[in-house]
Length: 401
Figure 1 (tube, one colour):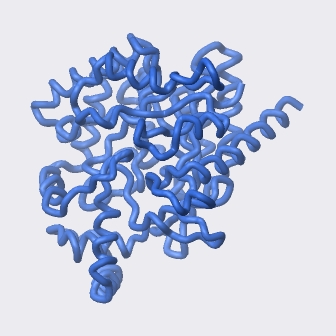
Figure 2 (cartoon, one colour):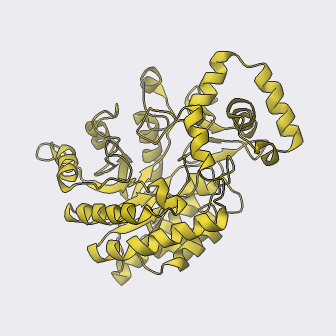
Figure 3 (tube, helix red, strand yellow):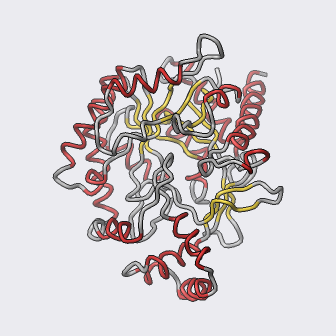
């Protein structure tokens, strides 16, 4: 059995429909209840309502089911280690129990402070005319130094970068400044609401005294609290790596390398404490051995994001490449995933068909004329899924021979 093929769906307002996902060949959906405020309990009634929406046409068409929650957000007070985290952790546990009651057994989360993934361009034109997501370090410095004007930001950039950023900012139009600002401040995936500059700086200020070690300790405290509940109800938790996998805006990032993953897995020795293996995020760093991570942590990988990024002439810059191009050796990665699934089938331990979704497809063809969530247009992900599906089948057949 191959990987469980899924796509992310942002709910009833997603311009990519459930029928689109079904026709892409998926038999499962990755979604979340974005309408519920972060930290509140996901009630059974709301979970069932979303399940019923996903399964409404199963009697007539190829069935879909809700396989993965992405994400059940971790409240900022938990990340900061505030006394109020106790109640938010209890709410998290209750949400896990309710999800398990609804038959959902995989829950993705992240521990990135303030922002989720960060990019500086949502419409980077590729050679074939399609549009991709891109991150440019100099542009990020423009935002940090010249737009946000974060106190202490100077220390995070080399003199040449600071000079280039200020020179570039002096030549930008008001429209270009607004576009860069809104791109960096884009809110949670599934939301089109961005932070305001003043609100954002206030959130950064709350992390002024929280450094790398403290954030790690807060993460380990959280997972030690919730993993036993997850394990008891049959849920696998899986953390998403930092994106990009490096400190930004003075904020620590603690899930960026294989060493970070190893420390987290050791902090709570439970299979419920698992990994969302995102080849795009981890692959941005050349020091992350992606096939090796699958070999060494295969039994803790509960969810897979397959995409690849391409480091540019300045290796601090990158863009989303075609799924079989870029810096990720997708053949080697999927071969290790197939071997891990074979091991699970032979031992009877673990989910044999690991949920996978193609991530961050290019905007192309008819989707160039539509409004879609950045990175989540239909046709680009369909192309990626088709390529990944074919690669996996070829690997499976070669191993059988």
